[in-house]
Length: 451
Image (cartoon, rainbow, N blue to C red; front, side, top):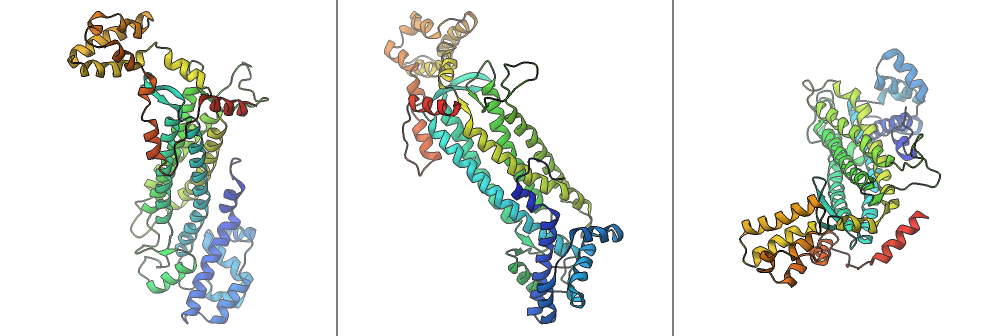
C-alpha cells in the first residue's frame, strides 16, 4: 500500500506498473544489444521491441503458481510476443534484470529528491538573509550562551544542506550501475563488452565486478545518505520545536486560522509538523540499518536482502521526498518573532556578555584566574538574585580600578559581538553580496505571513 503522504510522482515510480515497465526496458535493451552483436536474430529483436507488453494482473496470477516474480514476468510477456519470445531474456539471470532495473528506479526517485534538496536550500538561503541581522541568544546545553542572529542559525542549516546535496549526488551516482554478468558474475553466457553496451543503452555504467547481484555496499551508502538528510531535517525541526516552546516563543511553525491544536485545550498551538518530521526521520534512519545488514550475503548471492529492499528503498526515498518538501514549507511559512528574541537575549540582564568581559579584563592586565573569579562572582550573584550584571560590574571598585569604564561598556556592546556575521555570510554565500536588512523589513515580512 502506498502511504497517503506520497507525492504522485514518487508513487508512480514505485508502482507495480512502472517496476515491470522498467524490467521490460532492461530486457529490450539486452535483446537489441545481442541482436546488434549477431547473437539474437534481428527479426526477433524487432518483434520483441514492437510487441512486448504485459498485464500486471496476469503477472501476479502466474506468480501465484510459479512462486517466482521474474519467471512470471517473462512468461506473461512471452504470451503477448509470441514465437519470437524464445529470444526474450536470452543469456540473462533474474538479477541481471532486477538489479539493473532497480538502479533505474532509484535514479528516477533520486531525480525528485535532488530537486527537493535544491528547493530546501533556496528557502533556507532566503530566510537566512532575511534574518541575518536579527539578534537572538545562542544557547549551549539549552542555557543562554552568547548572542547570535537568527539568520546565522539558518545559514548553518543551509551549509549543511549543501553538504547533503553533494553527498546525495555522489551516493546516487554510485548506484547508477547495472549488471549483465550472469548467475555468479563470471559472464559464462555473455561478455563484459556486451554488458557495457547494454548498460550504455540504459544510461548506466557497468559494475566493474559483480556476483549474481550488484554489491549492496552501494545501496547501504545510498540509504545512509538518505538517513543523514533525514537527520538534518530532524535537527531543523527539533530546533524550531524548542524555539516554539511557550517559555521561549521566538519562532513558530505556521498555524492557520481554522487549525486546532488540542481537543481539550483551545489555546494550544502545537508544533505538529516539526514532530512529524522528527518522527518519520527515525524511520529513515532505521531503514539505513537494514541496508547495512543487507551487505553481507552468502557466497555469490542469497535473497535475504531482497525482501527488505522491497520495503526500505521505496519507503526511504518516498519519506525523503516527503520530509524535504515538508521542511521547505515549514521554513518558508514559519512565524518569527524578533522582539521576543531580543527580550530573551536581554532577560538575563547582561550575563551573556561575561565572556567578552573576561577577555577585556585579561587584556587590561588582570590574570585569567583573577578575571574569571571577579566575573563569575558577579554573574552568580546576578543569576541567583535576579540583579543587573552590568550594574554589578560597573559598581565593583576592583574592576573599575583596573579597566576604564569605556572598555567595560564596550564589553556589553551587542554589535561588537555580532561584527563578524557579515564575514560568515560571505563564506557561506560567496556569490551573494551582503545586504543589510533592518528590523522593520523583517517585521513587515512576518506580519505578511501572519495574514
